[in-house]
Length: 187
Image 1 (cartoon, rainbow, N blue to C red):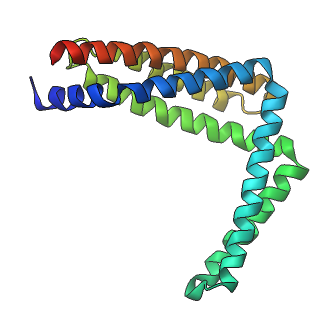
Image 2: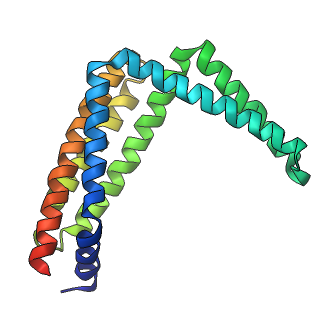
């Protein structure tokens, strides 16, 4: 067994369940996004707005409580956080549009990493690397679709996100159990 196969086998025996949890969370989010797209979009914007406002206020508070020489950066961070929070509440459509682009780029990067990981796992017999490759390809396609159509409505985006999350979650679940089985056979 190669060093890579040994490392992967060891990781699979101890942490395969993390991929299962990741898959289940993706599936749960996918179901929410598919059946409640408007509510999910509103919730995401509200949570982001609250977080940005709170983070901005805390940055400003930290200037008073000992920001030291970095007070200028903290002031800028605080103002930007508060501005982002206000924009999220006053202009939720702009926030959703920006979020679509963030999700698109995140999906592309995740896809690259999943494909890279799948190609490394290919060396390990029974690793289920094909499912990780499929998840990576799905991530790449999803990211490209969002970049090609960033102005589509929030509900449509969340339906696409829901489908993506369900597909990738299923791929992760299948891959996790195949990964576990393959590691058990190698051990």
